[in-house]
Amino acid sequence: MKQLPIQCIRIGDLPALQINNHLASAVVLLQGGQLIQFQPHGSAPLLWENPDAQFQRGKAVRTGIPICWPWFGDLNRNPKPVQSEFQKLPAQPAHGFARTGTWGLYDYNSHEAGTTLRLKLLETSGPLHLSLEIEIGEKLSLRLTTHNVSPKTVHFTQALHSYFPTHDISETSIHGLDDCEYLDALDGWKKKHQTGPVTFCEETDRVYCGSVEDLKIMRGSGATDENQNTLIESSGSSSCIVWNPWKEKAARLSQFSPEAYQAMLCVETANAAADSITLKEGRSHTLSLSLSRLP
Image (cartoon, one colour):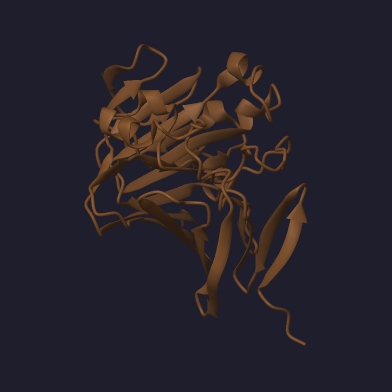
């Protein structure tokens, strides 16, 4: 009997979907709709798989691509229209409630380009409904769609909080943000200007402003390193977060070993800070992300 490309498994306390098709393998948690593994056959993983991640019910997991929605970061640091939209909720966790909410698989199909999963957040009772489409093939594609089912305009922020692996953060750079303005969260949210590629030599926490469709993560200059470089393509996004905790903060983080900062970075496809989405009644917005190896 031919094995189905999707299997139901458990990781720690959490149910998950394991996908293995003719092109790639992946794992998606049903808590948070969170993709925690993606690996094309014959290639290294494209996402950072945190060895210290804890898979506990109701707890955010620090690995893969957490979904931040319907606000990014601390709700009180969001634009006023977003704050007023959600400030009456009994719980206001950092990065919103979608990343620990329960998701359900409502459709999937296999095809020549891989496997497509369609999930939806089951616990939404307000004006916004959320769905996620994941395509697993030679590349990884995600489409996060917010639907306004209310008779009024609604405001929200969001991010696909992607963790990427690297062999050495000090030899890693991000290309495609040259000449962009950014807000430096470590310097009183001052607006600054990016010149050249983004490099890492200290704690980094920045929100880059403006629509950036293509970014490249470059990992050194050797032939082996070049084969591990990553292309990030996105749409429906007008901001990008770049984050690495560096040594001092890494020692204070949960689910994070003190030396892990050397082997990871976050490049988050987002609508964050002043870049909030205004969604009119009956309308939808899609945030798209595609990851692949650079040739």
